[in-house]
Structure formats: structure tokens, C-alpha cells
Length: 231
Image 1: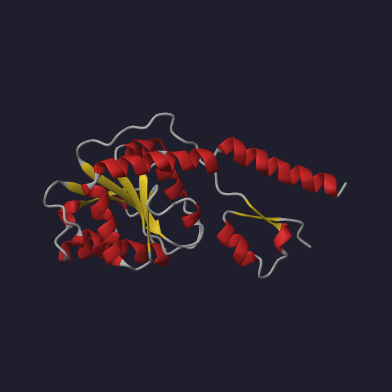
Image 2 (image 1 turned 135 degrees about the vertical axis):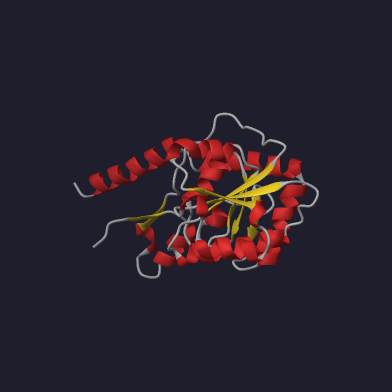
């Protein structure tokens, strides 16, 4: 009896088409406010990755990231990975112990849960954004990084490949492929010009595909169309 179903990606549309008539499924990606001006990163290398406690899929992604960090060749420069989460600045105890065991605790800083007011400051101050998610959706954290003009490294799941073009505004890796994840991190750390250009490309995609006004206009158009169809 559903007249229309709105989904956030073509990938989800394809999945839903197994149980719903495809003409009833409409794709509208999440929207995001974009930065007016790009801020080039400082000479320090800093990377932000966000995760939430209690989500097995995200915890698995964090574990992959930790293994990749241990493989990152950062002897030539200082690199700091910011780990965001709701476990506070001590971080998840299992992840912290893993960092200690791998002797890379000094490369990572648990920044706790970042408030909306501080998020943009963190995003603008980092080099690139990593989302090794096992979730098949379209993470808002990923879109926030793009909206701030950051190159992104993420997994090739769900709707993510619809906004991350491998080699253009970031890199896509297979979930669980730690060696590839480490290689892509090394690439962006060692090639600042590439990282900066990919970040500019991310902002371009965010402005063209994820604009708030376009989102509102499309959503209003859908509801108006349904209203006139059934009145």
C-alpha cells in the first residue's frame, strides 16, 4: 500500500527493488552544508576517524584501522590519528590495549565525542578522513569530511562508491583489506599535492550532489507530486 519509498542511495534502491516495485523507490542522497572556503592542512599530518561504541560493524572497522596504522611508514614525518567516539578520551579499552600491544599508542589520540560546534574545527585541521566502515549505508561522517574538502579513504560498500570516486576524491578499499588500507594511507601522507587535489574534488562532489537546497526542492517535489496524484 506504500505510495513511495525514499532511499539514500542507488545501492539501497536496488536492494529494496527485491520487495517493492522499482518505480515506487526514489533515491535522494543525504544533504550536507559545504564549506565556503577551503583551509589547507598544516605541516603536521593529522587524520581523523570516527567510530561509535557498541556497534560491532564499526568496531571491526576500527580494528582494521589499528592494524593499518601499525603498517604506516611514518618515519619521515610525524603523523597523528584522531580517534573519535563516545568512550571519552581514554577510548575503548580493547582498542587501547591493541594500540599498546602494537606499540603505536603514541600515534593515536582519543578525542572523545566531538560536539557539532567543534566538529568543523577538527575537520578543517586534518589532512584526510578515513571511514573503513562495514556498514552498507552512506555514513554522514563521510559526507561531513567531503563537505570540508577532505580526501577520503573508505570501504566500497553500500552507497559509498556513489560519492567516493576511487582515485578522484579519495580511495576505496575492500572491507578487511588491511594492507590496501595502509597503502592508501601512505599514499596520501606521502603525496600532499594529491591529497589536497582530492580534497578539492570531494568538495566539488558535495556541492554538486549533496546540496541542502537541492535536497529540499526534490523532497518537496516528491510530496507535492503524491499530493496532487491522490487528490
